[in-house]
Length: 475
Image (cartoon, rainbow, N blue to C red):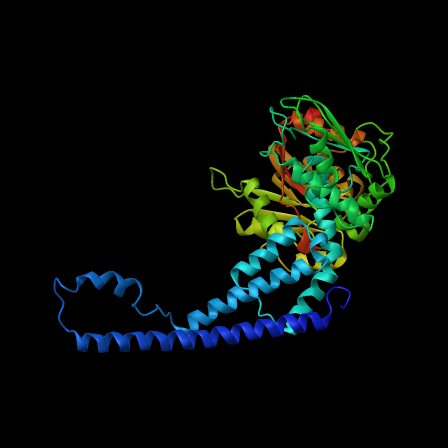
């Protein structure tokens, strides 16, 4: 703990804080006595001169501005404000005094600032040490999250942990305006600083000030002229080039730091980023994974995701017949139960023994439960809807979705959670799958980042919605 901030320093600051609050309390008492004294003096003056006429109205301004009693709020309100302001200032100073701020991403800073605005924790030695110890423990995760969010803002492909690697450069579109200055609508200046901060921290160095580093080098290279123009700047970590179209390219000079970034991203998303992925030798969908995924690929579907899936599934029809729904690899049945609660007739498939038993206990709310590996199940085109959250590992989600499509009636609707990498991978399977979905008029919609964090993974996800329109294109 002493590596972050010495206990003696905290004790000194807390002592100053406590003295300030004591002095505020004394000041309130003094103001209250002064207000009463002014009122008493005004009363004595009125006794001495009860008449007001044309000869004494000239003193009205002085009475109002100089001789009025001070406005004294209730003591609790006054001391509460004193505590709020003092503790907020002390916490801000503590953050500035420590080295934690350089490891905090924008989200962590925003969350901490919001806490201070709402109700700053009382500044005591124990609270300060406990708070900073918590930040120290979480600093690694916060830093990884900052890297993930920084790069995911540059390109939607960076949302996936398994379909890409940061390579030798990044492209920042519309970084500069038509006048040649920073395009503040895109705010790529701050994005470049976030990238630079990542490299400095990973190299064990303190990030430079706002005007220095790669930002300072870029601005110096573009100084002295106006309008669209090219430029080039270089630091120990980067080569930055600006182009006439307003784009900027940032080349990385340190392959070892790029490798560290990729490793930390993999740790954040809960899976190691593979080496450059070779396209599958098999064409299209012929290389289906028949083995079961690790831990059966199970991550429970959080309630907000369940709500999105059920909304997209449109579990209603014009006649009085029930919508028939299949949930493959149903897990604990979160989607199935939500569909049943919406009035659908639901069947489930689950290979895991204990989760199969759990699903059986949900009868008769769930119509049927099949204990089998879904990919080994013989297709029956008898369902109006398929709703699913399949395993993602090694493109298994594509295999499961393709198999699930065969269970739909003509014009039936499938809604599936899938890995965000499904939209971006360059494997033959992913490319062919996207072509199929496009031909069927399907769509991918992003789920918010960390939608599955409560289930133990930061893997980014999308929701696929597609109808079974053209069976002839199915593999």
